[in-house]
Amino acid sequence: MPAAVETAQERAEKLAELARGAYARGWALGTSGNFSAVAAAEPLRLLITPSGVDKGAVRGEDMVEVDADGRMVGGPGAATGRPSAETSLHLAIVRARGAGAVSHTHSVWSTVLSDAAAEKGGLAIEGYEMLKGLDGVVTHEHREWLPIVENTQDWSAGAAGVEAVLRQRPDTHGLLIRRHGLYTWGRDFDEAVRHLEVLEFLLEVVGRSG
Image (cartoon, rainbow, N blue to C red; front, side, top):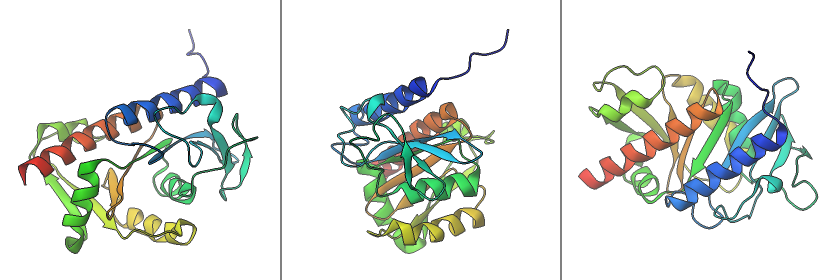
């Protein structure tokens, strides 16, 4: 029996549930962070959390939809909401990695470590069993490299640099924005959730071990 096709409402509710869960775990407090899922591939449509909405209270009906250029084209929250200021980053990751969903969190450890390791250009994480939760990783001896890029208030201009970094490092499962937080993704929604949980766990372990 074929799998049921996910409805637009179900997709929006799943995205809201992810955002609320990140808030509950201290990864996206207040209005910080943003989460997206590809709604259609051709032409590209991206469902994303709206700007300025508390992630602990966001609902499926708040989500907005943008096109490949980041212009709002609909979504249940289109009448009152506007896309995240970092929508261009989500689109860059979708283009560079073929991602089906993208998560961005502002956890304590991602923020602290993104600054502490900035001079090295990235953060290396290796030797932990939890690394095997990342797609394609089969051993704890894996070395995960999270590139670190400088923060900016103009991601419409800065997204191209992030896309270039990701194309140079096709092996990475995430990246850090300095003094800002973590971006990670997955080929589909479930993989994106798993990568978020794995990387946030690993960042806390590294931070507490330092």
